[in-house]
Image (tube, rainbow, N blue to C red; front, side, top):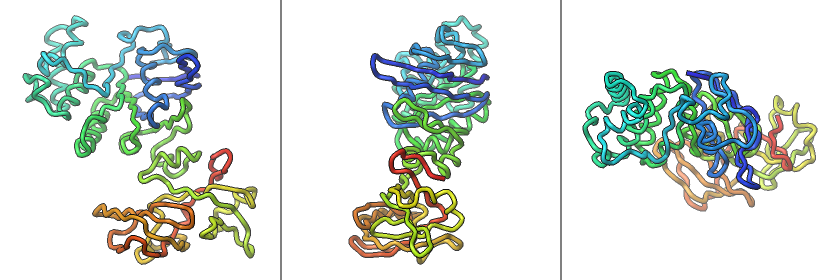
Length: 366
């Protein structure tokens, strides 16, 4: 069990900066998720921590020890890869035990660790099987078990669920969260799936183009994104964005989106005066757009005229894709709503949960 620190870490591949001045302090027993689009540098950062890539500059510390020049096998970490990489000719037991045998761990200790890990993962009945006799989810658990038996200070996960089907991903997410609670060890997890990040992490680090854009708890990232990228990446469906202007109309501050005009709530005005007359980006999440017939009480509701483009019935909710003027957006509405394609409708925006971003810098305006 250990803390982990990225201290001004850079990783360059020729002229390409894959990791750009990364600074993160990860507490002991924390579950940190590195999230971002493909090619953003999150896996490279994880491989640098594991020692599979040499860093170009900066320091990496595990338990306050600088490990820049420490061999991967001596860093006391265990990594679960996207590919399970199981030995096909070995049983599940031998796959899990293999690393311990290489370290010349006593046989009784190997047996204890393997059976303990198998019990934790619910694969005790599979120990005599070969990988080809297992489902994808079972193979994934064997790969995790192979890491558990190492009893490392830090667990690293590199998109371990990407090869699983949708139902199994949901189930395995819960299992990994339970595993973290049981082992009480530092977990660092890489994914491009923000749903995985939101459901498992104690903190999320959002990375894009090698840069750390924001790090915080899932709820804080969702409620208070620092910039346009984080706002659009965290949340599913993504936040809606509308090119707009902030103007004054009859003493009232207005978000003018061309095809709609929305009043800014009085308690939100204070930080926005400096933006009056300037181009902004107005943001609102799909769950803050409602069918007025079923809008929750107490919201700051303002109507917007729009046209229905597509509807997707999800059972407990409906995703409605709409157009207003030149803008397309999506709303998550009550399943009792009944909308037809090309129907002109009026929805309400909850302006109490609005977001405004600077058009040039893309930073949030609080």
